[in-house]
Amino acid sequence: MAPTPIYSPVTGRLMRVACFMSGSGTNAKKILERSRQPDKRYSVELIFTDVKDATLDKEGHKACKALDIAKEYGIAYECVDIIDFYASRGHSSKKDLSLRPEFDRLVVSAIEKYGIDLIALAGYMSITTKPLLDRYDGKIINVHPADLSVTLDGERKYVGVHTVRDAILAGERLIRSTTHVVREKVDNGEILVVSKPVPVILPVGVTLDRLREDKELLRVVVEEHQDLLKREGDWLIYPLTVQMIAEGRFALENGALYLNG
Image 1 (cartoon, rainbow, N blue to C red):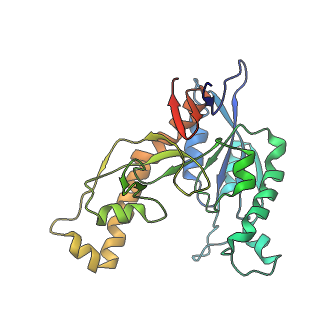
Image 2 (cartoon, rainbow, N blue to C red):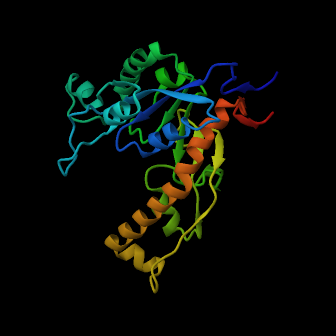
């Protein structure tokens, strides 16, 4: 049995992409910029967000720029605000994951009319659950600020939120970004593209022991490396991955990933 392409190209038709975001949307903008190149094979048809436009961050700034980006690029916008969803069910936070499948059923309903072929999570802060994962099986991707090919005792070593920090404190000399298929187990879907390495460079005279003791210094070092990894990792491989999927170059079969057959 032949592996199933994530997307099978159709002559005269661009692959239809939805970018899901909850914040600044820098990855979404990079994907959008790539879609405007002469060799484009995909079109971003929708910006979806789980954060309503009126939401402010701790500094009083707009927390999510999804609507701004949609207006800038002239594309459709949909929002199902997750905090409002939880509040309507008597919750003051979104911590109760048992409600998340119900939320994702609303998400599926909101985007169904757009005929989406691929969902690119671009700083989307809500965990995806079965209603969304089943409807777009193998067709949801993400970029992760770590090399997901690195394992420890048979498990991926750098998963979760603090992977750049964890890699630095583990003594890694190089860090990378990874694009991957989104599955129910977080950061454990099929690996698509791994970026070129970004060197870990600590300030002169600073040791790992010092970083472990000095939380403020650690924060600064981690932020510097995260920013560099975005520019030299995420922002390069994420648009590339979407383009390659649109060209029909990736296929899946029983947890294995095929490139160019």
